[in-house]
Length: 485
Image 1 (cartoon, one colour):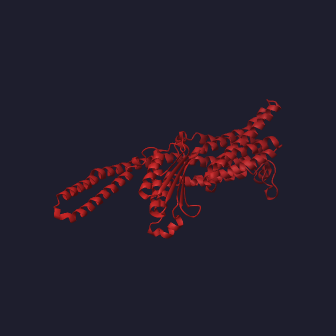
Image 2: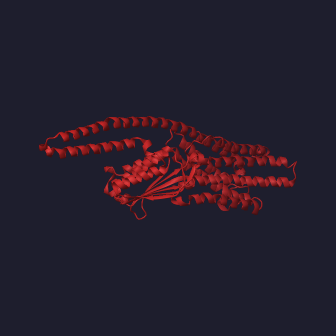
Image 3: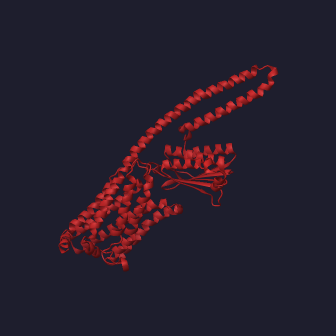
C-alpha cells in the first residue's frame, strides 16, 4: 500500500496532466465536429459541452504549471493564478449546467411557457454560486459550494439530457445510437458523483462523510483525479462515437432526398397524365353530351334532365380529379410564403364548410425551409379534414408564434372533443386515422407534437414545436398579423 502511495504521489503531476488532457481532447473533438447541417437539437448546443471540456482541461493543467511557476514568480502572481484556476473551474461547470438546462427544459411540456425563463435564469444562478464560492467563502469551502451547487446538478442534467435525446435518433439507420447516448448519460451520472460530490475535505455529515479525497484514496489506493480522468475518457469515447451519427444523418438525409425526388417525379407524371389524359377525355365526353342534347327531338324532353345530371356528375368528377392533382403537386401547396398559404387554406375551408376561421401570427417571422412549409401545410390540411369529418366545430383558430429558438403553432377548434369523438367512432371503424397521419408526419420532421382536449373538455388542441435550423434563425422578418374569415 505504501509503495503504491509513493508511486502515485511522485507521479501526481503526470496524473494531473493526463486528467487535463482527457477533458481538453474531449472538448476539442466536439468543437472540431462539423455539424452545421444537422437538424438535431443536440448539434446546436454541443458548443456548450465543448467549452466545458476545453476550459476544464486547461484549469486542471494549472495544477501542473502553477507549482512550476512558484519558483520564478512572486506570491501575488501565484495567488492570481490560483484565483484564475478557481474562476475557470466555476466557468466550466457553468457551461455544463447551461448545456443540461438548455437540452432538458424544452422536453418539460408542463412548463412550456417558462422554459425560456429557466434557460435565462441559469447564468444568474451560475454567477451567484461562483461569486459566493470564490470571493465570499474561505479556503476549500468555496470549492465545496461550487461542486455541490454547480458541478453536481450540471452533470446530472447533462446525463438526463443525453438519455432523453435518444428519442431524436430513433429514425436513423444505426443500432448503436441509443447505446452510445445511454453510455454517455451513464458517464455523466458517474461524473456527478466523482466530480460533484467528492470534495477535497469532508463536508457532509453521516453516511456521506466518506465523500472526500482522502477517504477515496485510502480505500481504493488511487486518487480521485484518476477516477475523474477515467470517467472523462469514457465520456470522450462515447460522445465521439455519438458525433459520428451526424455523418450518418447527412447520408440518411441524402437518401431520403433521392427517394423524395423520385416520388415527386412520379407524382408529377401522374398529375400530368391525369390532367392531359383523363380530365380531357371526361371534358370531351361532356361536350358530346351537350351536342347530343341539342340534337334531341322535341318529343324527347324527358331525356334532357338525365343528360344534365350526367353532365353535372362529370363536372364533379373533373373537380375531384383537379383537387387530387393539386394534392399531388407539392409545389402548388407551398406556393408563396407559409402564412399566405395557410391563409388561403383557411379561407377555402371557411367557404366550403361554412366554418368561421381565424389566423394569428406573433413574433419575428422566420423563413422556414420549403420542405417544412410543405409538411406544416399538410398537417393543417389534415387537421381541417378532421374538423370537417368528426368534430362538428363552428370555429377554427390557428396561431403561429415565432419564438427565439423555434416556431410553435396551435390549432384549436370548438367541436365535440377527442373523448366524445372516440366514443362516437370506435378505433376499429377508422377513428384517429387522421391523428395518426399527423403524428407520423410530425415524427418525420423531428418535431414535438401534442394533441389534447380543450380546457373545458370540449374541442381539440393540436400543438407543434418546430426548432429553427441555423440558416432559418439568421433570417427573421418582423411581423404581427391577425385575420379572420
